[in-house]
Length: 218
Image (tube, rainbow, N blue to C red; front, top):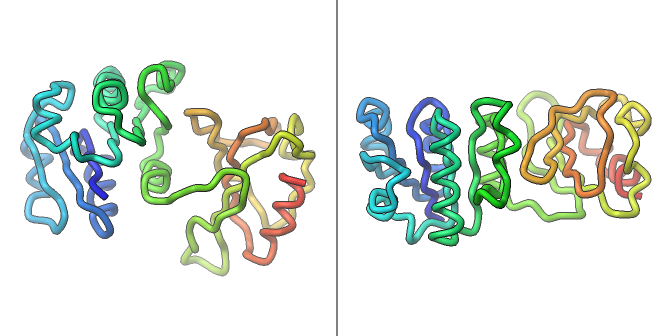
């Protein structure tokens, strides 16, 4: 798989270095100092240029990209890159970084963004994992203790829909850490209401996964 990452700042380098263990990576940025920190690393090719310029994107291999991650420090640039990737080059999956939460509402599929998030760790997870809707998957085995990060997608007939997290009766050793809702990531609190179509990420013990599935999916 070829993943093109626009932006080689701290977030872009984090993604490139982690994803290059399994995939071919292209990193494009105007800042040569940023790019130099990735040069020579296995499976990473760097390109100096403006990622909002279609010609530069093509030089960086967007025509063969499976995923584009637009993670510059400028929300306007991220939207332009996402729109080019989706609408001009028909990239299957476009992930964009939101720097200013006030701009979150702009990062929609109409602008070419499949998923918009701010956390580098969640961006990495969304790119590197194949997630099936309507079922629970173990996404990541945590190294501390016997814990798993799992995801549950809320179906139409879920008994949890329209209920606050505090009303769900989740096991003591289960904590909701994020909700993927449309193209946004919601940081949940006890008063957060669960909606149909939400993908709820929880940290829990493996033996509790079925109990959580029963509570959230019925």
